[in-house]
Image (tube, rainbow, N blue to C red; front, side, top):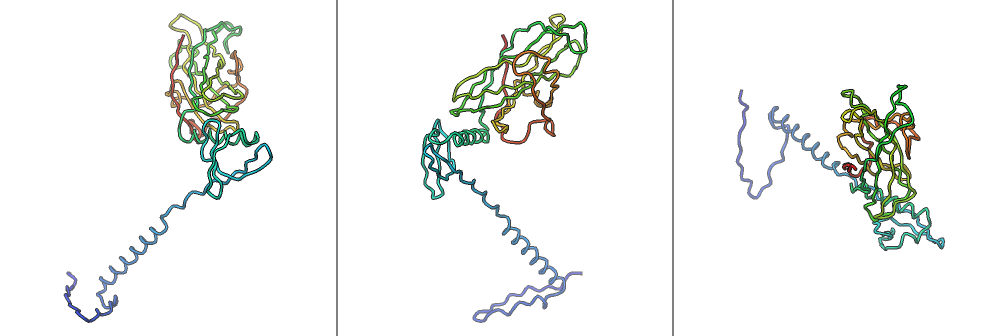
Length: 298
């Protein structure tokens, strides 16, 4: 049944239009008007609440200079050996980082490192060289006769930034296929750590990894190294960079290791602690810089 509707064309001229009364409409019209009104009201209310509150500004830090004078300010930027600060009154200025006491200097460098990590800029560059294999003086685990070779990497670490890196902690896993004669055998994980006191701006450091045990057979059957996975932390153990010589390993393998196996390896940085792998088996949450690289072999 077609509703009885009339289109009214009225010229009110000098008079005001009559008051609109919903009650005077047919029942089906009243329901439509009410529903439209409710819908428009909900949309308006949703729009009013859609504004995202501005992020709270970081709390000012109290800096103390060598003379004991203090100032409250926020860090704007760190360039070279200088820091730009902004006071609550809006005044900005740049001073030498060494102006402040040691704790404040450490705070400034920490801020600069975390800022670089958040921007996704790689802080360190890693270059690997395979070390010559040596004969172990121990038998392979689980065997009384098999004496493996020991293999590892020499790692050159370059600080690519203009920042002083104080007490970085570089935890790593050496991946090895210990016995290529066994098809699809799982990779062995050897854990180690390198923790220098400092790597200066645009400077280099180097270390040798723990040694993996490789079963020796015919040349084509020798065990082999498969790559290195490094996680770099600051002095407070916050992750600032992750890098792997073979990026596919980060997808296929988990950050887990056998601490006892690592101790059986030879060389610097042998396993000294255990950590739980991330819940998802991948990289932990947090700001992380670039994670790819390559290997150069002798």
